[in-house]
Length: 393
Image (tube, rainbow, N blue to C red; front, top):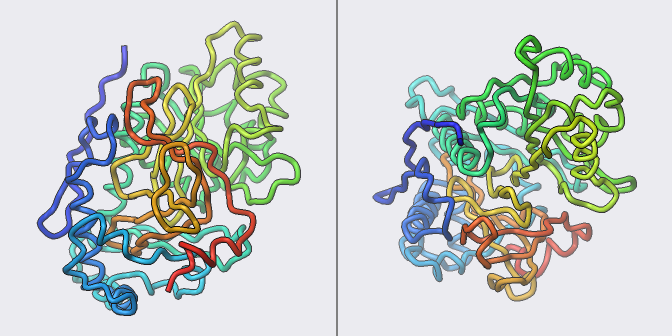
């Protein structure tokens, strides 16, 4: 029997349009029309209240008031990673928020105060990109994540989570706050635990060990030898290499990965954990992957079948575009991942994040008809992101 979860009611609202993102029914189908109306209203708000986008829309001869249809939204030129990387920290904030940032948020409503600031790793070779979230943004984000977890994860199997993400990375606070909201006890790897050996020792000795210790793990998968990228904390690959006592195989019932692709040749993470399960005589650990980045999350999550990540209704609207035509790809086709972060802090509208994926609309084995992303990969040739549909203005 699945654990009972009560989530806070949380509404994503811009202008006269709103949608209840705590509604669990949102995870079964494609983006609803009401969600697109919220998206369009958000873009209108951004164009009216953010100097950067007022100028950008004017150069593209787009009137903010005309963005009331999907066709009008898709006429907005995407932004490339290089373009975003060149901006100052506060450029994508609304005008009023920039004023508060200069003088202090003393008179601002609590929900509009800046709550989190994250910076990308810069592993792509570009200048790190900055993203601000308000208190309300963070509440929407964590509620969306908790909603996804409550519908996808076998909550009856887990209660105490070990969070291995680097404390300075967006993944650490995201995992901690969303899983705590869900109902789990969450403990992060201590900042003094700077080696995989030290992290493994904490995981084995803490987590209310007298009650059985940790039974869930949030962690970066790891990178195959020679792969480009930056790990965001101790990774699963390194822990499995050190886990001579088979703690993970014996105790961890659910593993949530994020930060890089999980099922890549050379890692064999699921197979290694399942081998440990078999040695311990317990049922297989279940794997789930979440997709997001410091600029916007959560974007998508895979179900128990691990055959693609279901796009999520929430603070991120995701498109997959043909890099030559700029049009949305069809079922089974591959393209650039382009996101719009629907929030009050840093505004990212049609931003090509630097990933490519296959877009799938076939109904999943789990019964959900929400579109999925498969085989998500970083774009190695950065020139591809500075031209074509992601070339900006």
